Length: 143
Image 1 (cartoon, helix red, strand yellow):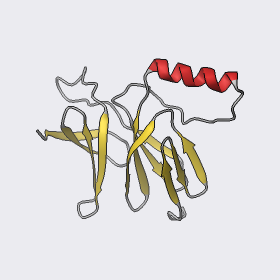
Image 2 (spheres, rainbow, N blue to C red):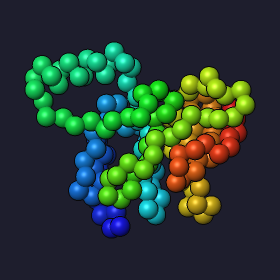
Image 3 (cartoon, helix red, strand yellow):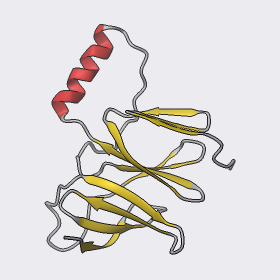
Image 4 (cartoon, rainbow, N blue to C red):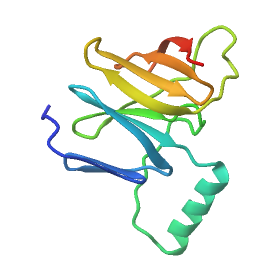
């Protein structure tokens, strides 16, 4: 795998080396580890997605969007390798009492000293995330 030579982030687009990825929502945060890039996207509502799709069809635009395995707003963090390949989309929390927890991710950071990835959600929960699978391992309430 080649290293990270070029990274550009603008609104809904991230370019990783020579690969361009376009999201349907605005890119809110990016974190970089030695071999991965983590992206948090402000997921649009279903109405907004439908509106965008109608405009693409109406004007015959050549736009290729990143597809999501689930459009749920709380699964809005993604991991890519340095070639721009999607490794994972964050998984919903699997903690007791969290089955209905639908709070969007609003921040991401990589702790280089501990080699740990953390994401924060809108409801002030901070999760430690498995960098290889996107599974939320544990959490704390930060407020």
